[in-house]
Amino acid sequence: MPLYAPPDVNTPVLSQFSLKGKIAAVTGGARGIGVEVVRGLAEAGADVALIYSTSSDAPEIAAKIASETGVRVEAFQCDVRSREDTARAVNHIAADFGKGRLDIMVANAGVCANIPNLEYTEETWRYNNSVNLDGVMWTAQAAGKIFKQQGKGNLIITASVSAILVNIPQTQAAYNASKAAAVHLAKSLAVEWVDFARVNCISPGFIMTEMLTRQPKERFDKWLSMIPGQRICHAAELKSAYVFLASDACCYMTGANMVIDGGYTLP
Image 1 (cartoon, helix red, strand yellow):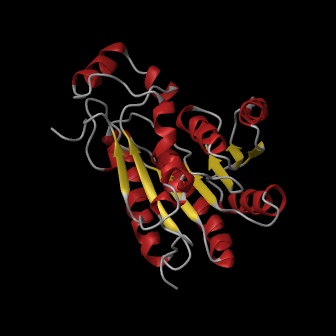
Image 2: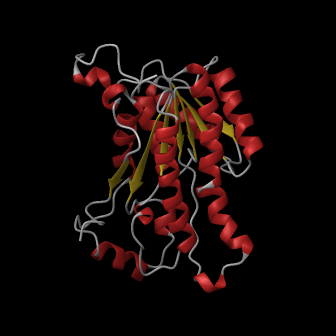
């Protein structure tokens, strides 16, 4: 089968961005970029499964977004490091929440640790890779099986500018490597799944999330000085990009890595 094309490519452009009637799921959906992705997909009309690992307030966050947007938003607990648990959660979401369907999966869950390379242990190396790469793989696999059965689906992976450059002054080889691997995994799946799913990445630069605000002020100031845009991005500024990739507005786009970084990677 060829890459999916919308029934009518000449429909008014704004209607192509609508996600009304779609079923979406977002891992890492209770915090940072993830919660804004959940909000954006819901604002565009999708019913959204907010997938979280340890955030005890996830059900309340989901209920608040549902109230604000008028669509269904529900929280589902899952450990994306586990292939078995991820398959269980995604299948449950598709069967019950989606009433037999899943249209959009956003593999967004991620972690970061600053560790000098010579000090990594098996455990600390595994910490980043188990979420940032293994978690993406198991999320993709679980959703991909559903997409293949349906004949259509859409996977969006949250990567990072760390996939294409080495951030300084922090030492985070595991994070950088895992994000680069996630981007190449997306490209591989885009080719392998071309007859039933689109697969794309978004690579944000410095985003005002808890992961960033926990950093020392001198490091924060260093990063700010390196951004041509001269400011840090608010997570809400990313949600429209996810809606774009999730919608029929870009049906010919697959295997892409959309960099959103205020020009950080350009100099």
